[in-house]
Amino acid sequence: MKKILLVEDDAIIASGLVYALEQEGYAVIHSGSLANAKQEALINTFDLAIIDMQLPDGTGFDVREKLKDTGTSIIFLTVVDDEGNIVRAFESGADDYITKPFRLRELLARIKRTLNARGDAERSLFLTIGKIKIDVSAGKVYHDETLLDLTALEYRLLLIFAQNKGQMLSRTQILENIWDSAGNFVEDNTLTVYVKRLREKLNGAVVIETVRGLGYRVN
Picture 1 (cartoon, helix red, strand yellow):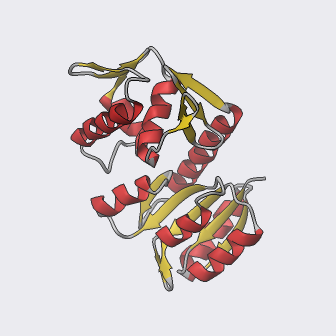
Picture 2 (cartoon, helix red, strand yellow):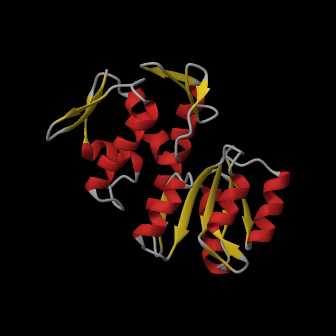
C-alpha cells in the first residue's frame, strides 16, 4: 500500500482529500502545519507528499526541504498561479504543481501518474547515455565516476533523453514530460535555455542534436 503525506491546513479540503485518497487504497497521514509535517517525516517513510504551499508556520518549500533526501515524490497544491513560483517549485524537485481550485479526478490521476513514474524509475536502477551513467534510484548522474551537479529540471531533461535514445523528441513532447500533461507553466524558449545549460554541464559526454524546427535527438 502506498503511503501519502498530506500537508494541508484547510480542514475541509484536508478531510475531503483524506477520504478520497483512502477510497483509492492509499494510506494517508494528514499534517496541518509545517511543524507537524516535519515530525511525521522523522518517524515515517512516504511514497508521495501532497503539500499546500501556504502553511500557517511556513511554506511548502520548507516541507520539501525536510523530505529532500528521502526519495519522496512531491506534488504542490497552491492558490498562487505565478510562473516564478512554479519554476522554483520544479527546480526544487517537485513532480507536479496543481493550482486551487482543482478537480478531484484530475488530482487523483496526477497522483497515480506520479507514483507510477516513481515505480518505473525504481525498477530501472541505472541508465547509460553516451559517456554518462544515471543512477535513477538515487537521482545522481556520473561522468567517468565524477558526480555532476544538475538541477532537478536538468536531471529530468537528461532522463527523458536517456529513456528515448535514438528518437526525435519534439519540443512539445519534452515540455509535457517535464511539466504537466498539458505542457503548461513554461514558455517554449525556456526549453532552449535548459538544453544549453545541460550541454554545458555534460561537456560533450552526451551529444544532444538539435533537429531544426522540430526538437532534439540523442543517439
